[in-house]
Length: 148
Image (cartoon, rainbow, N blue to C red; front, side, top):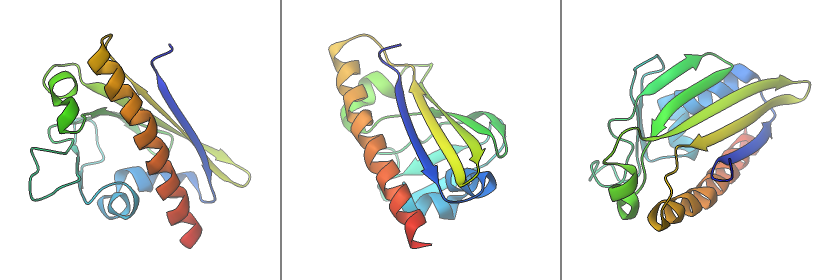
């Protein structure tokens, strides 16, 4: 349990709008990635590209949606950047991200859970990277929502 990454945020929008921020290509490109190719259905793609000119180097290419129930939860595979490719991108199962969307009076609470971390120095370095990466991503998401 100590290796699970959990991030939470409350957005001033409906659960449907919050869900769209994680499943709509244009929405994802406003706060999380340079290019998105997401098919919001079970076994659909969940491919995000941080360097679209070199898609094999820094992306979630090959990742799939494992479970989806709009607008309540989304579960998908996840890969790491090049420095963690040996531990995160070559072996299955990949790490796993689940996002829950809870309607609240003043908006929607988002809970993100990132699991599947191995037990080695390299895995711990990757996990630490993603603790900070998800912090940055949620900050960008909150900033984006404040601009609307």
